[in-house]
Image (cartoon, rainbow over all chains, first blue to last red; front, side, top):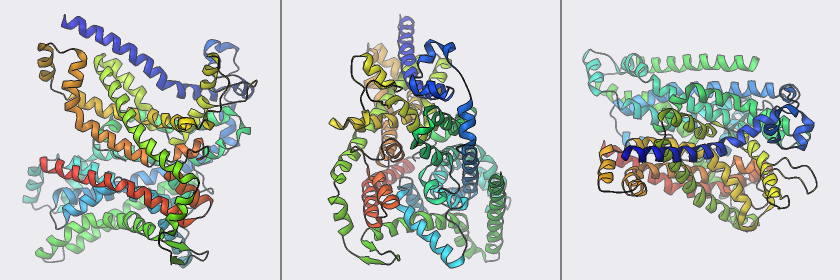
Length: 287
Length: 329
């Protein structure tokens, strides 16, 4: 009897999930279909018409070609990459180093500093933006080195804001490394520097990967920091997309195609590296 | 392409330089006698990060708080004006609406997100493991979508054209099928309906996150506690509410807090959908508008300080929670 009840329960759950997941997918599917339609049709009929009579429809890729060339979305794509790749990789070493210190070394104020880092996990970005911007501008005034408006400005800010989460995830992971392993290496006369590079860093690769995926998506999808620190000279995808939203002349299908271009990378990351992403999330994503 | 090359160069050079600096510091610290070395060495590991965090997060945040009590002249000089910026902000027409909106976001979004995530996690637990994986991917996928892209996606749902013209918005089409007239959804301020429409987007984005964490918690509920319930004749609902839910409660709270913080800081969705018009503005949107569009540093900083003040209790909660967790391990 138990088995039949479970089966019945399974069938009920299945139906509920089918309905819910259809609802959840609907918006994205609509966007995708719209991006493949001809301009005139996308302006006059809803995308769901296509589902009922797919062959009456002029399918075309021209929206993608238009946005990539005329709207400079291809350039924005490169800009997004140029912001995201360093902002993902550069914080890793810093964070791993600090996480090692917090996990395996004892020093005065360890608990205090770590509590500060936990507290900073939730601090709003907006609180720091304006003074940091002013700092960059005053450095430029004094030395002539341009920082704001360059990719480097976004790398610095993203790296710094990534630190609390990165250290938290990495420390949680490093705490699972048996202490006897570290002690044994110390017995053999290895310095902390050697233990970090030879032992802890290689073991921590899965945690580093989890964090890197998380950070990659976060930076790729960010609008505010890119808007403030990189701005309109090198517009990233979110920036260009928001600008396109303001100009309806382009037509619905153009914005849809643009949106899909920017979605393509996160979706690719998601479908290929889902397991690591989920692991990073369960390891303490609180951003 | 040149930009991409710059970026890759920066990655290689950045890592090489950091590694070299750490190596150099390590060499230097080893020149000292053992007792000093032991004291200094930990700070080689955490020092650079403390410096980064101090320079880019802690000090600027304190400066923002200071700026909220200052008036800024065009040349950048500041004079202390007490609480005037806050008074100016409170006097804005949008202020009371903004407070109500923010409160609505934090009252509605976290609870619905956790409930929906929990429901999906529980249902997904009943179907076979292959189906479960596929369903989970579907609910989780929006997590990877940027707020701006999400706004584009949902514009297709909420789109409006005046009566008699072609409707391309899904919601309006459904509404007209039911016999209604086309509605400009974002302009419906009654019961803050337009705010609710924006909240739907954040719930859509974050339910998957709640689902993943709650599903992991549900799976770790010991089977024998469920079996004991069944033996005692508890029905499915009783088993869920009396046995499963109490055991996953800590996870539910943790997810709730995370979504709560997200709802407090909500910005991109409002910016991209309504720009804060039609009484949909929120604190973070006000900061953006006052600083970057109107150039009112004082009022913008006052808005930021309110946002920080709102988050401080959550911050203390997190630290305390972490301490307890740490003591238990």
